[in-house]
Length: 495
Image: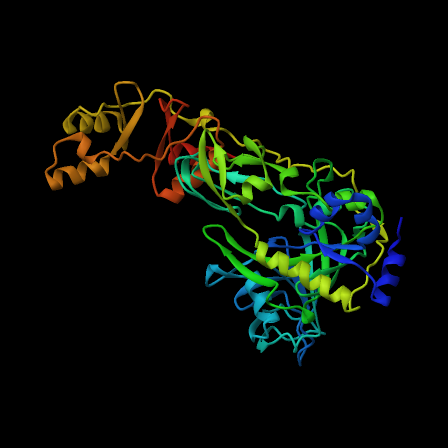
């Protein structure tokens, strides 16, 4: 048995034995008892996209003073409901001008890198704060305080993602190709901080950590902390002025938004053999679920359960096929964080802290409960579908569209499966180009929907692909209905 005080004494004397989390499994396997006695600290690390991040900044008072009610940093809006010249810039806030190309995460990186940023502020004016507008340029050295404060970081583990739908999806899990052609996953597995202390014996309020290239602290559990199923999180804080842009990187996620890559490392004290065993965990022992993001609901279907070892191999078996798997975290930088933290400890520049209170282990993750229920496609779709076959003439399809006052006709093959779709616009082009066969003008790559999907999801799909209707198909790709943007708008407007 050792205490944190014992280990800190060893650090002061230059006797502490520090190893990285990727080294501990072999050390422990060779001799568990010796590993517990001789190893004092295991350094862990993670470097990944952590959207729930941001910074509090105090800009100081202008002359005459201003009480900022709106503020933009490089055209990224920051929150001002704190005090006159305090703001919080969120990593996921996007630029008013550049959109997904630039956001709060990039502002934070620019500040840490020493680059000048533009500040623009508006106010309503008061007797003590008469100024209504302000504009200036600042660097990190110009502001009074800049505190990185992240409400949710370093997920203990994170489910992987694939996409069963027939269209590409752009998500916070990266680009997911159609028909389960790829798997993306987050987290660093066996070197993840919370995975090396899953019972939170040494991690909690006040734990000193590596944060963004500087010393920081755990301020408690993170939002969405879900320890009962092994999905713990932490909230963290540190002085932005001491950090490095090597470990804080603004990110753009295609088709989704912006974020911030954050480097976090936590030293795990080896107090006894149980802690040694915990830090000897291997990727093969950590499993996560591959979720189907092609189904847009909170409780997404599980495709299969998989280990981090398989995920890191680059190939995952799904439906009898080998599918490419890609990490969203950087192992290279994570290992560098572990090594840097080890060097700090060995140089007597970093000491351990005993948490004032450990992370809770009994919290429950609750869902939002909207007052009005969201209808499903089945509730709004037209079930009596006007359709044609690939061998029908263009003239017959034209008559169907005119007689039924519709804009599109699904094309169904001999087996009753969806083969394509023809719109009124397709028919107009056929006349202009003198095409006579239906097969030559119909669209074969059809945007489809399922009856169990929420109408909000289909509304997004129609807008994304700029179409005004979508056939509803079953698992055998047989058409069971059709839903139009008009059908959906009627429901959404009533909600």
